[in-house]
Length: 312
View 1: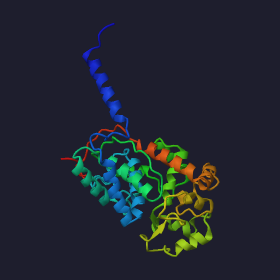
View 2 (view 1 turned 60 degrees about the vertical axis):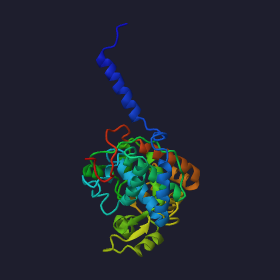
View 3 (view 1 turned 135 degrees about the horizontal axis):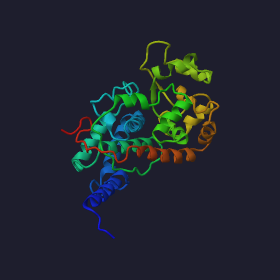
View 4 (view 1 turned 120 degrees about the vertical axis):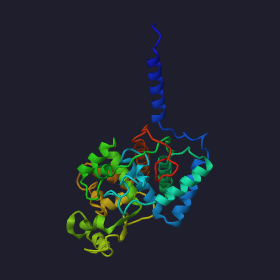
């Protein structure tokens, strides 16, 4: 058998290197930054104790990061317009918490941990600290050197989306309709601005409980007050549980896009299942979060020293 050429050897090494990088691992920082998980957990505990809503905000921040260029920390960049794109402007928050965690991580193991991985861990801990599940987060992401306002505008589902649009936008990211319905359960925590649900509560939708609409009208006027907040989950707004799905069955979804999951369509049976089985929802949510966290795994990038700017 002929000996391999130098080019073939180099190609083999290159492919092996890419495969190793593309595969995230729950033990990625076991030796290079062994205290990473406890550093993130400590800062998140303080942040959520100060403001329970922050757990929801960082979970949403991770979601909005992963749907644009993959889970690469691009949403954390001040430049590039992603932070101020339509779905994110005056909406995404929690950047200061990520800054604090990054500072603490850099003090322990400088230049080792990506901002993208810090965000993934913060989203997990925020979920768990509000009563939700915990899971082993696959790590090893790189930080993007670019952000994209255009992809944020194209890829992130609006609160007015139809079921078909939701399935399509999640499918574009390699996520199934079941993944989409499970991930939507993140709306069991957090707050929403009046401008995102005003149309639904003032006659835009017929599939809404009248008493629920009246309740939300109490803090969201027909005009003005765009920034007034309401809990997305009317039952347990600061606890991660399956009440979101119970709300949908009762036609008490806050967003049009929420209620689309239970409106005579393909996801009705799954919503009913989640509404009566917290364990099934929890299991599917964790699986979908890990799957979503793999979007863009293996992307080229860097380890940013400051999550807001690319390295100079």
